[in-house]
Image (tube, rainbow, N blue to C red; front, side, top):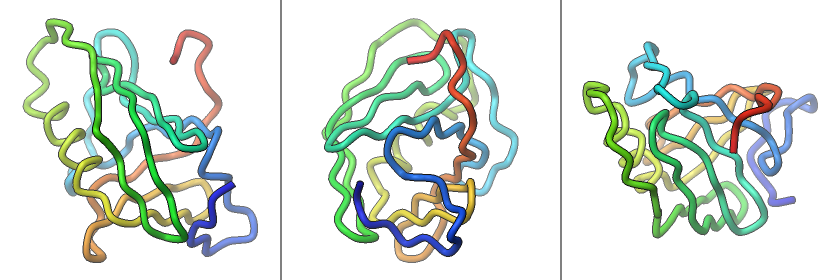
Amino acid sequence: MPKVAESSDNAVPLTGTYWRLVELAGAKEIKPGPRREPHLILGTGDFKGSSGCNRLFGPVTVDGETVKFGPIAATKMACPDDGGQERRFFEALEGAEAVEIEGTALSLLNAGRVLARFQAQDQPAASE
């Protein structure tokens, strides 16, 4: 498992955890998608997830507290207007430079600024 800045001994692992998107670019109102909720699951060297409509996947590199997603691939399904949430989700992944886990919360950071925050939860049966 990669080393990650964990501020709690009870922090959940970065890899293998279902991370549900709960905050994006400062907005705490996340719109659920028509097919699934926005989320990420990180593996060793790769990730998969959903923007809520389109599935996303690709390589991820974690070294200490630093992280790099991409190139990011995604399906191209026709989606209802989500007010730009999907675009902001991709921008957060592409812009992330660091990760931080506090208990059951995962933050993606750039220059100390939170781009996206996720909450660990049990993986729904119908997810990725």
